[in-house]
Length: 228
Image 1 (spheres, rainbow, N blue to C red):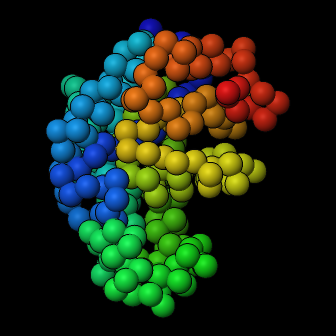
Image 2: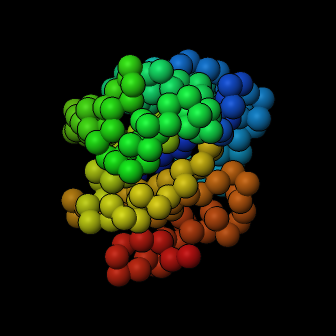
């Protein structure tokens, strides 16, 4: 049985895709996992097995890369796919690299970099609207969350949820990498959500990484974050 305290949420970003999600902006384009991405998800499954974590349910977006990833991490666990957790729609920029965006649309690229919080992607979704739908989707789900929930989602969705849950730590959350296949664990204590692990990656699925989670209850800092 898992030693994670209280009600726990494990957020995993899906793995690499056939379209090259590491460098391309695939929001709501439904690209599947690549072989590399499947390997990343199996590595996450190994982490979960090592900390003896059994999920009660898996929550994903409706996109194939998240649904397949959840099946690889937690085979046989019931899945709920919610459109409210789909990645932001990049509109005309879907599938482009940052350099391609800069070359094709320099004025809006500059506006995006200077004011990302309020940016509306051309032909796509505005950032404030995206964040609101993600928050609202989670709040509708929150009352019925079981003890251990796996969320396999997208970079923007995970950052939005962590920011929403961990009040007062917006700057720290903004600095996270949230790489493909990264793992983020938060637990509820006395009505507040605290991070046990942030930016854990399959490439560092070591005994030390697992110990961060297993021993977290006795090694938290004054801010409730894991010691590094």
